[in-house]
Image (cartoon, rainbow, N blue to C red; front, side, top):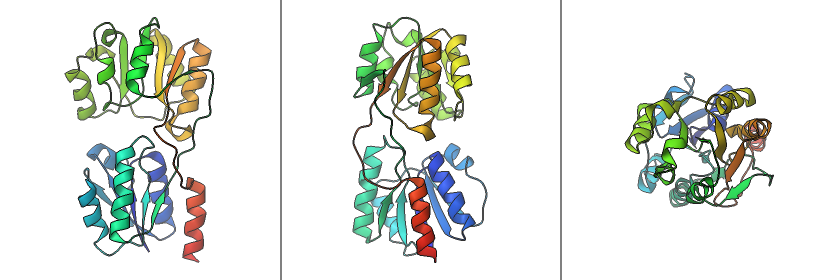
Length: 248
């Protein structure tokens, strides 16, 4: 059996390692060299690095050596998931979506998108810790808001470059690899005088609850960007069970 697995998420890496341990071949597709560097070396795991459009995905799927496609991309990567579903259907391959656990409603500020988050932050005092990634920082790169922001991004040249191009102070850019514990989040909040923490509803694997607990303990406002849509699929454990049955 050989699986085509998309996603450099923590769940995607865990599933790839687990499959390899079960003797299954995996081609794991990640977008960047940095994402590839996080994948442990294993002869059963082949890494494909680079972003693919729908035709590129379909071309890879049509190579003829994959039994199924597993989509373990980030829950906010809506277009990627849409392209994967269509490409798998066109290539005649079974498609499975790995779902990250969701975030329940809580006592935080909910917004539908990052522009809404930026708008709500104008009424909050203190520094702003942005934990939404480097690709979507533009709504915060505006006068009166940018100088208060502390983007926490992956430790890569691309991530740092995006922050600097948008005019964020180099002294405010925190290049770090997660996951982050409650204690580390709390230390950052206190170190930089953070009055508001912005996050996506990324679930436990994305460190969501550690951010929630740190913000609550510090008395820091929490702004949560809700997921763009409700998806159907299987959890990591459900997928493992499904593969075990297929391997019998």
